Structures are given as C-alpha cells and as structure tokens.
Image 1 (spheres, rainbow, N blue to C red):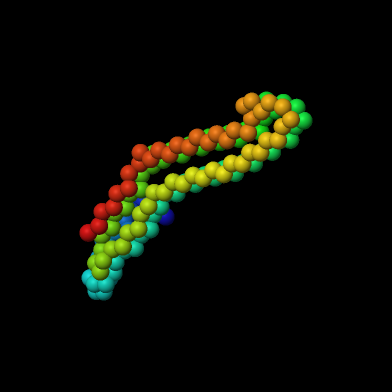
Image 2 (tube, rainbow, N blue to C red):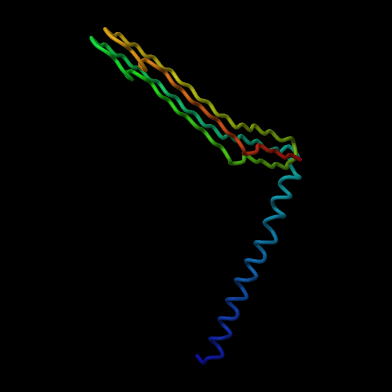
Length: 143
C-alpha cells in the first residue's frame, strides 16, 4: 500500500464517524419531541429539600457535703447557617408537581440537680444559645 491509499482510508473513516455522530445529534431531539407530543400526558414531579437538625441533651447531678462553686452547669451553643439555594425549574405537558422545602430545627433538653451542704454559687445553671440563619433562596419555575 502506498501513502495515498492509507491517507484516503483515514479520510473515509473520519468522514464516516463524523456522519454517524451528526445523525445521532440530529435525530435524538426529534425522537424525544415525538414521544412527548404523542402522549400529551407527561408531567414532571420533583421533590427537593434542604434540612438541618440539631439536638442537645444534657444532664448534670451534683451531691456535695461542702460548697459546690461553679458546678453542675450545662452549656449548649447551637448555630445553623444555610446560604445555599433550592431552585427548581420544570416544563412539561400534563402538569407539573413540585414540593420544595428548607427546614431547620433545633432542640435542647437540659437537667441539672444540685444537692449541697454549703454554698451553691454559680452551680446548677442551664444555658442554651441557639441561632438559625437562612440567607438562601427557595425558587420554583414551572411552565
């Protein structure tokens, strides 16, 4: 084989591949359109959620025959921050259903018991600080 025949074979193979890819790109959207128009009952269902949850359970018990200074304290600091977005877009025949939510929950349960024979200054305190911040968006678009 000479160099011209090899070059021509490479050209034919490359051109054949390009034609197959072009046909696939052209026919695939047409197939999807035909399917959608044929049924007229297709719709979209979407469910999205962003959930954050925190829980704190603390128990403290002190029994002392003397002074219980700064003892049996429960401290709970909880912070939730959501800066993300929850976006949804749908288009379809036959109706669309979208269920979106952004939820944040926090709970704290604290118990403190102090039994002392002396002073209980600064003891048996339950301190709970909770913060929730949501600067994200929750948007849905349907047609």
